[in-house]
Length: 621
Image (spheres, rainbow, N blue to C red):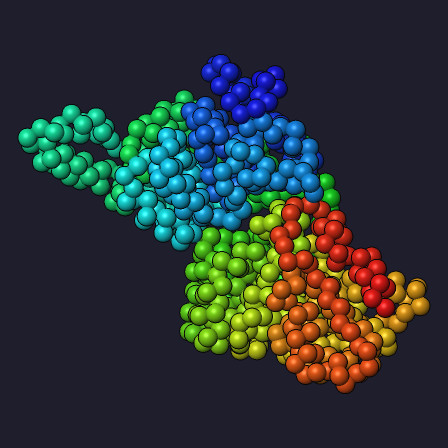
C-alpha cells in the first residue's frame, strides 16, 4: 500500500510519519518474498530497514551520499532510491547487482563488496567535497563485524583529525556473517549495556567562545566532560581518537535515528552514531539461523528451508578432511577470518576448539598470525575465500613465503562464483599466488584428489595453496588416483593429436571436451596439471613430442596464469623447434572483471565451458 508509492528517490518523504511502521513491514515482506525466489543477502537487509528509512528521510539523496560497507545491507536503500523493479532480476546476469554500483544509480557513490572500506572511502569523498567547496552530507555505514578489520581503524585514526562534518554510522548487530569474535565486539557489548552519559552540546562552547576567559573555560569544560564520560561510558575510546560518539541508539526507532542524524550534522568533526539492530528482524528463520540467511539461495518462506537439496560441496569435503587431519596430527590447527561456517571449519572448531582461531574480518592478520603459529612449530591451515585472500598479498610474501613457513592456504570459492559478481569472483589467485617464489600452488580435480592434496600439503613442510571452486564436488574419474608428488602432473588419457592440460575444476570440462572431439574424429589426451607452481616441465616436453596442439584450461584470468606459464616454458626451452608444427592454445578467463550471474551462463559467456572450448579447438585444428 505504501511501498507502491515509492518509485524514485525522495518519495519516502511523502509518506506520513504515522505510516512509517507499516512501510517498514511492507519492505520486509517485499524483501523476503523476492529473495526467496532469487536468493541474496537477507538477514543483514532485514536488520537495517528503519536505519535506511531514517537516512533517506534526513538526507537529500543523491546530493548527499551514503557509502555502505560491504554492501550486503543495501537492498532497502535500492528500494527507496527507485530500483524496486530490479529485484525481479536481483543478482542475475544483466540484472540488478546485490551490491552498490555507481553504474547502476547516482544514489550509489562508491562500489563496495569487501569489508572495512567505507570509512576510508567516505573520508576521500569528504575531502573532495571540501576542496570543491560543496555543501552536502557524507555518511558511511559500517557494521560491527567490519570494524574488526584493520583498515577501518586506520581510517578512524585519520578521521579523528577532521575539522569538517563526516558521519559514521556503526550498525551493531553482534554479527558479521557468523557471530563476531574478539575485543571490539566485547567492547561494543559493554557500550550497549552501559547506562549512557551526559553529552555537553557545542552550543555551550560557542557561547563562551570569544570571551576573555573563553578558551580556558572551554578547556576546563572539555576536561571535566571527558573525565565524566571516562567514568560513565566505554564509548570514550572513540572520543579519545577525536571522534564524537553518539549512542547507543535503537536502530529500529526511526524517530530516534532521525534525531541522532540531525544532531550529527551539527558537528564540524567526524561523528560516530552507534546504532543497535537485530540481524534478520521480522523473519524468525533468519533470526535463528543468521549465518544461513546471510547469503542464501532460493528458499521456502514458510519453513526457511532451501528449495534445492544441496549436494556434497567442495567445502563439505574440506570440512570432513580437516577433522580427520586434526585427529591424526595434534600440530594441525585452523585459522579463518570470520568465516567458520562459510569455509566449513565449524566442525573442526567443535572437535578441537583449542586449535581453532577465528580472527574476525582481518585477512592480513590471519596470515601473519598463521605465520607465527608455524614459526612456533604448528601447522596452520588458513581457510579464506579466493577473493578475500587478495587482501593479504603482502603478508603471504613477506611473513610466510620469505621464511618458507609451513602454512597451508585453503583457497575456497576459486574461479567463477556467480551471483555476487565482480567483487567476489575468485579469478586472480593462480596469477598472484604462482608469482610468489617458494609458494606451491595446486588444484584438485575431484573429491578424492582434494583429500589427498590436503594431506600432502600438511606433510610438505612448506607454504602451499590449494585452490578449489564453489559448488558440488566433482566425483568423476575416481579410478585415477595417482600419488601426489610436488610438481608432477597426472596423465589420465594418452592419445595423440591434442593434449588437454587442465587445472583443477577444468579437468571435468576437459573430459567433456574430449568426448565431443572424439565425436568429430579427433583424439585428445587429458593431463591433470595438479600443480601451477611448479609446473610439470617433463609432462609439457612429452606432450610437445606427441601432439600437434597443446591446450591449457584454467578458471583464472590469462595474465600470469597457468597457460602463460606453460607457453613461457615452451618458448624458453625452444620446444616448438623440437616438435613439428605443435601449437599452444590458452583457454582462460579474459583479463577483465566478470559480473554477476549464474555460473554456467558466465562460463559460457567467457568461453570456458565445454562447448566453447571444443569450438575453439576445432577452429584451430
